[in-house]
Each structure stands twice: as C-alpha cells, then as structure tokens.
Length: 149
Image 1 (spheres, helix red, strand yellow):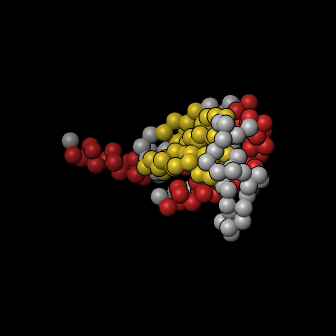
Image 2 (cartoon, helix red, strand yellow; image 1 turned 60 degrees about the horizontal axis):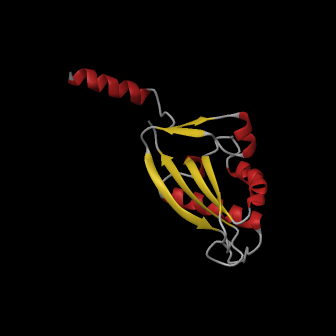
Image 3 (spheres, one colour; image 1 turned 45 degrees about the vertical axis):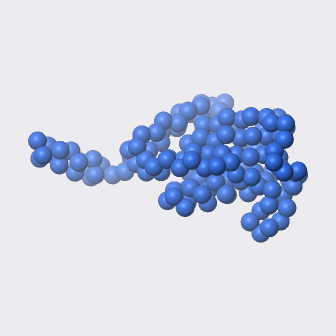
C-alpha cells in the first residue's frame, strides 16, 4: 500500500505544478475585466483587506484622481500578496466599492493592465454613499490563492 501511495506521489510530482486556479471565462465578462467564476483547489489563501489609493507610494495625493487611485490600489494588492509569496496574478476575487456607478467603465481598462493575460478575478461591485476620507473614490478588497493543486 505504501508503494502505491509513493508511486502516486512521485507521478504527481513528475507531472509538474498544476495551477491552483481555473478561470471560467465568458466573452462579455472578459470585455468588462472579470471572470464569472474562478475554481480553486488547494493552495494558500490570502485575504487582502480593503485597499485605498488616496496617497500614492511617493506620498502624493490622489484625491479626486480615480485612475490614479485604482492603480495605487492594485499595486497595493500586489504588494500584500507578494508578501505571502504570490502576486496579483493569484487574486481570484475582488470586491470593489465605488462612490459613483459611472466609475465602473473607467476601471475596466485599468483591470486589463494588471491582468493582461485575461485571467481576471471574479468581481463584485458595490456603490456606496461615501468612503472614509474626502476625495476617496474607491476601495478594493481581494482574495488570492497561491500554490498548486
């Protein structure tokens, strides 16, 4: 019995790593920068707190600059996941909080910058009355899965 288990383990190891994520794609969803679903199996889960982009990495204010805030946020998500051994490519779902529903369209091309291969995370967008600071236009939380099946 041990020999069978060892042989199976060696066969799986020899087959090489298998992605821990399977992106369920759909044409309209791809054009909007998200996947309708992402299937995961195994891996290490990283729960990323809501990130904001009111101040960029150089200490410059991004108040009122939606695209600037979005890029700062996605870089911050990438940095958190990198601390756990992955990258933004490992993000499987995001929750976006917007202060104005008209901001969803300008967000789509920015998502494509961070997931250029089209393996977009699943996504939920919620419009809120306001966020914790004046000039803050969005906040994004994320979940990443790092590792193999």
